[in-house]
Length: 128
Image (cartoon, rainbow, N blue to C red; front, side, top):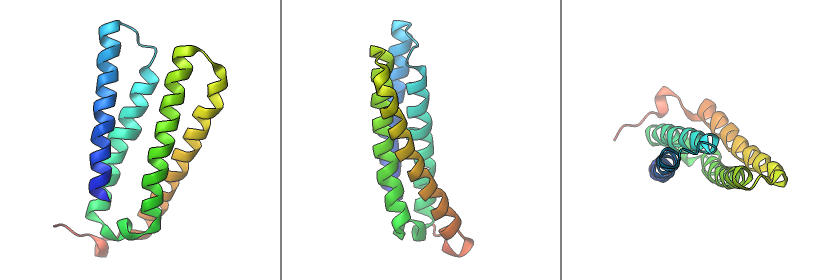
């Protein structure tokens, strides 16, 4: 699962950098929050989680790791599409959808934290 986290994080990295390039070219920085969250929660956080899962396979085997992967991705996608749409359309009705995505993502991160505290130990470290 560590490799899947790293691969999907690269997709978020390309999206985040592309959004940053778009903002620079158009001089429209209204999407800075979306850009920052995609890069932080998509690229950086998921890459680091992937490295942890790769180095500590016991964390990968735990159902918490699978739940983290699914919830993190679903929550981030919902949150970013809704936030993008809210900013571009001004439709405040999308605010709760941003919140729902954020809650889903946060639950995934809490699963990750529990998994790390439970399974990331020196005796579980594996380097291939």
